[in-house]
Amino acid sequence: MKYAFWTGCVAKQGAPELYQSTVASLGVLGIEVEELVGGACTGAGVLTERNPRLADALNARTFAMAEQMGLPIMTICSTCTGTMYASHERLKDEAYRAEINEILAPEGLQYNGTTEIYHLMWILVEKIGLEKLRSYVKVPLSGLNVAPFYGCYILRPSRLMDPQHHDRDTYLEQIIVALGANAVDYSGATKCCGFPLTTMNRISALKMTGTHIAEAKDKGADLLVTPCPLCHLNLDGQQVDAAKVMGRSLDVPILHLPQLLGIAFGLDAKDLGLHRNLISPRRIFERARRMAVTSS
Image (cartoon, rainbow, N blue to C red; front, side, top):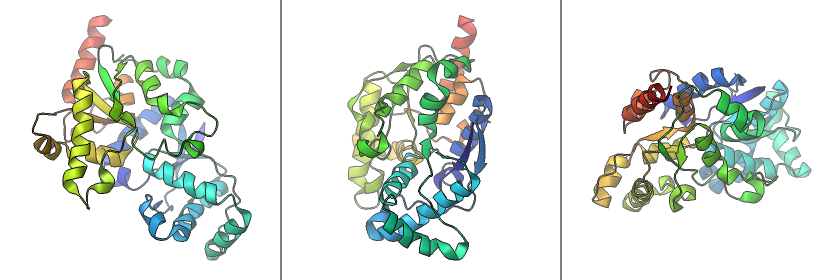
C-alpha cells in the first residue's frame, strides 16, 4: 500500500506535530509513502474564490506529479482534500483540462485526469479496514470519551466527498470506537470551527470555536480529535481566547487524528509531538497508559 503523500502547508509549518505523528503512525500501519515535495499549496478555497483557474492549475500540477509517480494521493488535511476534490471535479471537463495543461506544459507536466485522492481517515476505514486497525492497538483507549470534529471541507458537498456513499460522515466515530474509546455525540461535530472568520470577525470566530468545545465538554468529552489541521489551529491554538469570550473554562485537549492513533498504538508522546499541543494532552496520554496497564 503506497501513496503519493501530500502533506499540505500546515503540517510542515503551523502544526508540525501533525506531520511528525503521521509519519510515526504510518510506520505501524505499514503504509508506504513518497512525498510530493514539489507540489504547491491547494489554495485552501480562498484562492479558488479569487482566481479559480489559477487554483485549478496549481492542483492539476500536483495531480500530474502523482500521475507520473503512478500513485494515488494521500492527504492529511481536510481543507486540502476538499479543495483538491473541487478542482478534480472541474478538471473532468476535457476541454478545460486541456487549457490547464497548456499552463503546465513548460514544466513538462500533463494531467490526464486519472489521479485518485484519499484522506488518511478514508484510508483507515476503506483500505486498511477497522478490524485490521484494531489489531494494531496496544493501548486501548477504554474509558476515554472522544468527540469527533470533522470541520467543513471533508464532508461538503457530499456528492463529491462521498460519491460512493460510504457514510464517510461517520468514519471518525468508527475509528474512535475501533481504538477502544467512546465516541461523543454532539451537534458541533460537523460544523465550521470558525477559522475562515478569524481575520474578518475574530469574536464571532472565537464564539464558534468555544461553542463547539463547550458542547462537547458538557456531553462528557475528554478530548476532541480532528482530521483537519486548520480546525486544530483554531480549536487548540485559539481555545484560551475562546474561553474568555465564552466566559467559562474549557481546557479540552484537541488531537490530530494521527496523534490519537499513535497513543492507541503505544507510541511515545515525543514521537507524536504531544508537547507541541497548546492545550496539553499529557494527562490523556498518561491516563490511557494507566488504564491499559490496569486492564492487562
